[in-house]
Amino acid sequence: MKRFLPFFLMISFLISGTILFSQSDDDDSVQNNTLTPEEIAAGWQLLFDGKTTNGWRGFKTDKLPQGWKVEDDCFVTLGRGGDLGGDVISDEQYEDFELSLEWKMSKGGNSGIFFHVLEGDYPTIYATGPEYQLLDDVGFPTKVEEWQKTGANYAMHIASKNKKLKPVGEFNTSRIKVKDGHVEHWLNGEKIVEYDLWTDDWKNRVKNCKWKDYPGYGLAIKGHIGLQDHGSKVMFRNIKIRDLTDKGNPIFNGKDLTGWNIHGTEKWYVENGELVCESGPDKKYGYLATDKEYKDFIMHLFFLQEADGNSGVFFRSSLDGTKISGWQVEVAPEGHDTGGIYESYGRGWLRQIPDEKENILKPGEWNEMVILVKGNRVMTWLNGEMMSDLTDQKIGEANGVIALQIHSGGGIKVRWKDLYVREL
Image 1 (cartoon, rainbow, N blue to C red):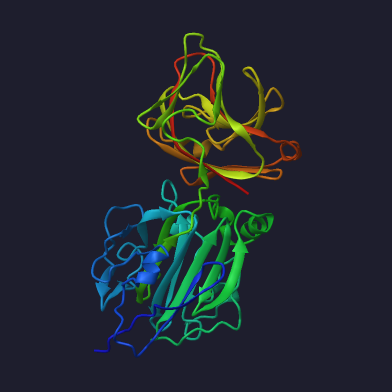
Image 2: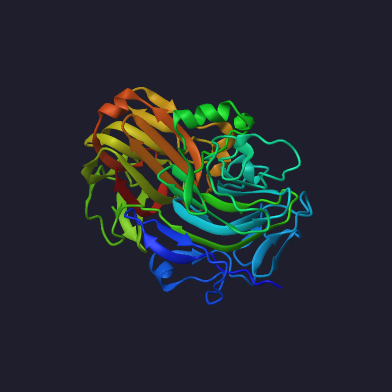
């Protein structure tokens, strides 16, 4: 039986730091599903070891679907489809990343690679995750549109008509790069599609295609990698990924409140490397604000609501004692719009979250929040899911500090950790 050879031989570094790979069909000296020292140094990791299915599971299940197995050093979907097949996702979730893999399609076959896949209440991987389409463009049994062909951002953006797709029976190399919402699709060493998530153009395309009935489509900032069983046998190998997420600089050192100012009489302290806010005897509003002002930035943080949890993250704000002027990304008990945007001492709620998203908050557990503030636009994500997307001229004109809040009324205790800010 013919031994399939690795597609990964590093040939160069681009100025941007992106690594390009070449494939050899005749070199038996390099083993599939391994990393070179150069790849390891560049941060690449294997998502498939060539021997086991470790790191993968079925969508919304802890088990691998029956329609997948390891065969000839490849991760193979047997094309059973439906309940017997089922799509698979990576155990880990990724925000910004570069994914590279090889795939070989059966005649007339159809499959896909997905990213930013969420589970929760969503019925399928394509309900949330954009798709790099895989298809036998030549031998598919029915007529297909350009947006259905290999390399397309399925139903959204077509691939270059000059792409170099290898014939059925040969391995193709695909690569997906996601960075700050900008996405690139590559095929056999050439870029064939690029687009931006969350833009007005993106929203309009969603509204005018088959995804219009999928409210969570393409809105996640973080999620699983997915591979599709669409009723065709497809072989995958050399599945490699590197994390490109840049969270910026920590604004909490895990030891003390250096870089922060306390406003009010409520309690702020460090415990076990975590920042704790807790109501004091006065049961009034309290704030912990950064020394530094921030204009355009992306912020990552985790919070755990130990008691009550009525708090928030202010941005582009100013304080006079405990009177704050600015905007708050809400952190509140379940049912009270965590991830919404509120203007204090002004217009009040600017964006409340949909009722169906109230269950995204995990009470009593660590929650991950991402806040993007750029120009007059504010976007928020909770546990990977977009909660708010607001464009507001008044916000765009402002500047100010970042501040954490203790709401008045007493009984509040919230823990914070891993607070990072990257200025844009």
